[in-house]
Length: 230
Image (cartoon, rainbow, N blue to C red; front, side, top):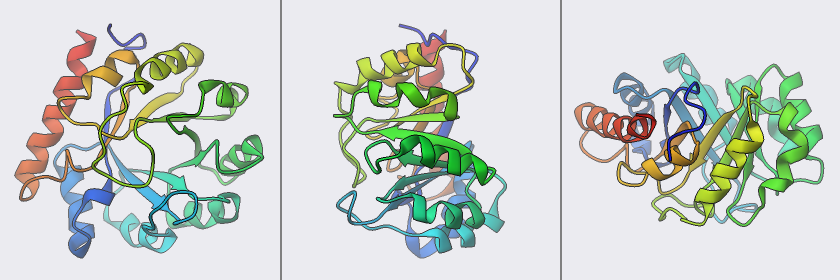
């Protein structure tokens, strides 16, 4: 099945979680030079998900290196306390989880009040009905295609139909539909065909020895996604 909304551009968003943290700034600029569209920043707190990554200071340190979109995925609970810090650090899109707090609509309003685009994420076991009432408050919907917390997991096939249903829910709203988890050149066509247009990829981008390999990896992802639209 081809993407029902071909007007939404394909965007590849490398997750820096898979980068070499000893040279993180260079890894970010290499990914952008290699053709990435966004930079995906996975923030984990060891509470909402079983892993700890980084906070706003890392985002702030990377911000001067590129004007690419910083796509900040907050896998933290509570999130509201930290929204302003990530906004000030330079995030362009701030995504909160539907499962991470009692007042999702309030969180999304707070993101937009900070002058940032608002995203909402749902885990594999969360039905899309959980976000139906906030559709007019978001700029991005992130459907997790693995259980969040660690990179390198296998794509959860059961999420494909959910992606398709979310695309139908979006309708003609100007909302990006993002997927995160198990995205490789071999799997990307499945969520792309279901209607996703933004693809987070970690190890599938940051495999190899640097810029030339990253460029080949990103091109392979983009070609496989765009092939679903032809």
